[in-house]
Length: 229
Image 1 (cartoon, rainbow, N blue to C red):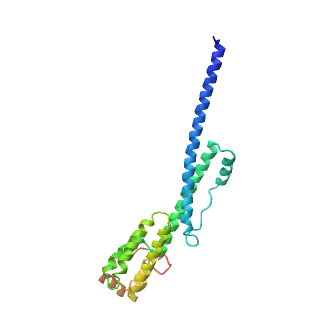
Image 2 (image 1 turned 120 degrees about the horizontal axis):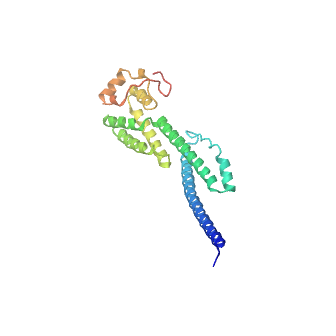
Image 3 (image 1 turned 180 degrees about the vertical axis):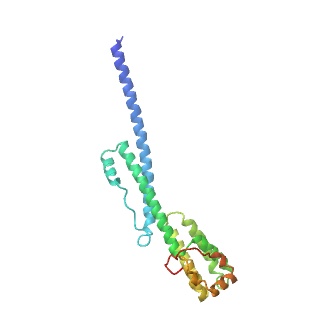
């Protein structure tokens, strides 16, 4: 029969072994969780990089790396502890948020520069659908703008670029068919805002006759193209 000292020692060893097993399982669970989070972050960053590639040279200028990320990556590579991996996951998550915001913001600004406000322009296209000479172009433009408005809410892809190109082509065709007195106003108004002096009597009468005046509003400030307001 084991004496008291032996029993205590064996009990302590059993407790230590159980504690080690619990810590080991906790570490394994943490590693599994970090592995999933790293996969998610890298997958999202890869997709965002592919989206940003569509704007290279036009609206994508890149983002600065998160301070300390490279150091933490090197440290985690040499010492893959839960502490190091946790730091890497936190910094990659922050980078992902910054890249997503930059991609979305750049894409939306680019769409606005090429096609104006897709929602407002769609209402204008709907109003002009019955105008003689525009009845074939305006409905197509309205449909393409509706598609673009939905695509604008997510990072761009090949389909987004195709639809934007379709919108700009249809918008140019619609503007080409407008009366000369109206063309300058509508073109400026749908791309950053028109100077108020462009809304002369001829333009106003045409908009009233074609039930399109309500699609434009006067706001304080200067047009984005820098024209007089």
